[in-house]
Amino acid sequence: MSDLAILRIAIAGCLAASLLISFALTPLSMRIAGRIGAVDIPKDDRRMHKIPIPRFGGFAIFLAAFVVILLVRFVLFRYLPYSESYDEPVEKLTGVLAGGLLIYLLGVFDDIFTLSPVIKLFGQIICATATFILDVRIPAFDVIGLEFSSESFWGIALSYIVTLLWIVAITNMVNLVDGLDGLAAGVSVIAALSIAYSAYIHGQYTVTLAMLAVAGAAAGFLPFNFHPAKTFMGDGGALFLGFMIGSISVIGPAKGPTVVASIVPLFVLGVPIFDTLFAIFRRKTGGRPIFSADKGHLHHQLSYIGMGQRRSVMMIYGISSVMGIAAIVFSRRLYLEAVALFLTAVIFLFVLIWGWNDHSKKS
View 1 (spheres, rainbow, N blue to C red):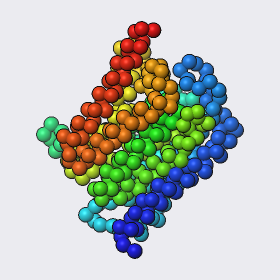
View 2 (spheres, rainbow, N blue to C red):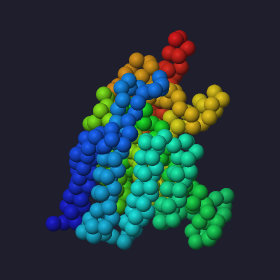
View 3 (cartoon, rainbow, N blue to C red):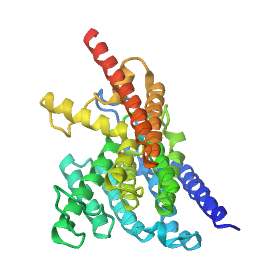
């Protein structure tokens, strides 16, 4: 059997195994949720559902992705075609797994005991720091004409700050977009598949397989979470998905200049990034704390202008897909085409926001 055939079998196997494990474990997570008190009870008008729903689906997502990535790290990669020219960082998956375990436990505690935003942020910093210590990091780069060696104090400090900001930001962006049935899971699938394909065409098989494991875990959970949802992933699932996408994208960005490697994930996660920045601006101008919850997110706004949950989610899926394609095109150095696709998606976002503003003024 050729090396290419082995690689393709591994790719299909990772995606299928993760999907099936998640799909099989989600009903179990729903039963566990009732026993441990991880149930989302609508207590305010910010909730889009009217009845109590279990929110422990992250258990299935976590186990599916964790087990498959664990197999990739310690078993599967030994049998895959390997070339030193690809500089495969498979050993860095240990840091990703360690941080993923910690962030999932943090999310579970929040689902059961409802942690304060400050404690959650502090916990995320600890998780990202643990991952950094295990060599999952964005390398030091030139800043204001000064070149920092990756072994120097300033190089390590700069690398730590940038890595920490990146992982914590992506973690929270996915968590914030978890507001409609199937939204966070679907956007995570699109983002993970886009990064996986971008990594594949550049020969980065560690990132490809790990991202496919994440995509499969979210996809296996999606049938139970799409409107009308039977279960939610909870903070355990949302934080885990965001953390894994952020940390895996760090270990093997597309080959080329640092700015190109960094922009690929930014394109993929354009919708969560836009929604997060808009939320910060909205709360600051409204005199509210940045971490306060509200119903001004993009997915809420789409529902208010009469699109309903399913159509709202599908609309955001479409915009996320365009941005994902833009990321893949950008990674292939087709910059003009990528920017055109990205701007098209941004225009759609602004049109939707303007539609909400017109609606709110009339009501």
